[in-house]
Length: 165
Length: 147
Image 1 (cartoon, each protein chain N blue to C red):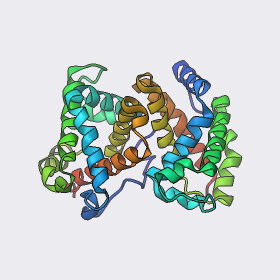
Image 2: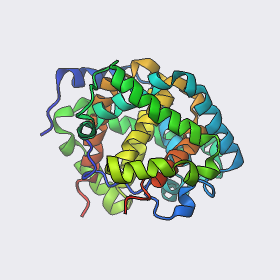
Image 3: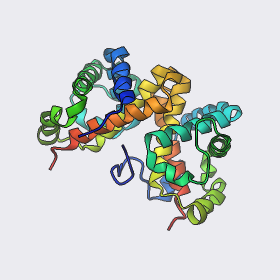
């Protein structure tokens, strides 16, 4: 079972805000690809979001500690509404990746001062988002799409954590 | 010693029983080399790894992907003592190949995504949980003999 203490994975830790904007990491083609994928997820945001969260909490049980106040059983309305918020935020941001720092400012404050989710968990959710996309897209989620999406989600997570300290 | 539920054992045997190793192995390794390009550092003598298409078409990558996945089979057949099963391979990767053990995690993540893409909706959250627990044990065992 993977927990943050056991898995200090280095491949998605960004400490420089310039790289965290995704502006320097992603090509124009990659940004278009990312926006296109998320655009398709908007109408099914509750389904996709709930699935990402369920995958995360099943595979990494330590993440359940942040949801003690919600009903997190499969299919629960809490899971769907919470998942929808997350998917819509990621999708919205994908429409203009270069402006990520501005778009995410309110969410940065929320996560730093109110939610205070340990940022090591962001990469666990990002991984489960990739798995969900793969399960839904099959071969279409090829290595190029996977690489682009992983970079985008890593940048998103890094920006989200920027106000923590 | 790792404790496996009946569901977990059955899930692992089922996934690997139905898997085409010669398809999934190359797919997972090539994906790893594309998504995490720094892993290419271990494959200097594999020829053209210049871009995604080159990597996915590279016969040495494909052959090595098959080798790696068939190596995973040993754990599938010895779920109750994965640590001992991989003791020698762990020493090899540490002393001879000098592979950063974080790479095992990267490849495991890519393998998970390849399997998810192949299985679609059948790769449920519970199935994913079992699969990732299995890979976590493999990864840990491969890193065990490093010092």
